[in-house]
Length: 421
Image 1 (tube, helix red, strand yellow):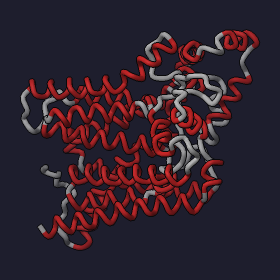
Image 2 (tube, one colour; image 1 turned 120 degrees about the horizontal axis):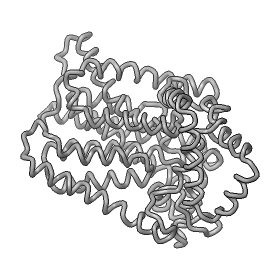
Image 3 (cartoon, helix red, strand yellow; image 1 turned 90 degrees about the vertical axis):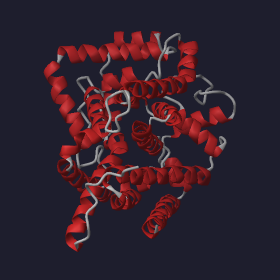
Image 4 (cartoon, helix red, strand yellow; image 1 turned 60 degrees about the vertical axis):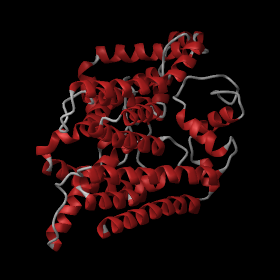
């Protein structure tokens, strides 16, 4: 009882520290810096939602360009006002939730000490500490995906119907934050059917998977129905075509990955022929048709350059998973972000190797990495796109930290003991 109470107090202290660090770091830079260095279109969409004009650009035109949940979150936090403090506190709380989820997964995988180590590492991880309070969706995405993963493992263990529905709901919200989560969510639903170590009957496994999938579908349905009414097509967003083309054309690597993909995209736009520009101009008011046009051009390039596509996929994944940040920043930022990520990556790889005999316990986590790597190879990716996976690296690293501490101090190790409940 005393150990459990001490654990709760220490974990609570880490969570409070995580929140204060995030608020303090962002507040120190000031609101002017925040708004100047943000993806301001998220705020424009949030302001449109808060004003009752729906999910539309500042000119009032409805859009399906990007999935809406982050803008909904911003609208709820700010009520459409340029309220720096309200958004900062809301996002700091979300990021603190990521710290709590890291502790929950580490406890399940490696024990109580690893939970505290994972919480501390996540609380202090420079990328999360700073970027989770930026005006971008990465912090919310990281929280929702790791929270969904926590619920997924809990559902596998208990097979509770409420847990299964909650898992589907949170996965749906994650997809509505960034659509690339969809393949992982589908995998997660299917994984619930697989025979588990808790000896649940096949019927129970199928029931929880179906309920999880139904909740996921129900969460996505309003957005899909809205987009179908707007465009006549069932689509999550109109981003895919342009992303495929920007990641697969003769100019993709002109600037990327050392610099932002936006520069390579501009070069690709600049190389369009007069006929291409005329074709795009003819469908300028149809986002989905433009996406289809870019998708076709991207596929044509891939089919015409299969070898280049494969080598390009490798380069894209090296950019996303590499220690040197993509795109590059000033040397201090690169050193802090790249150095902290590099240390966590090495420790995580050691942790994965140490626990290789338990690989079945971690299948959803590994699948998340594999699916992201596949998507990155087909499209493209910067370091920021990979950042939502760093929390799982931290969890594996925490097991190594605990084992090393136990070896040094002579304490009984718990890094190999999964949480029993």
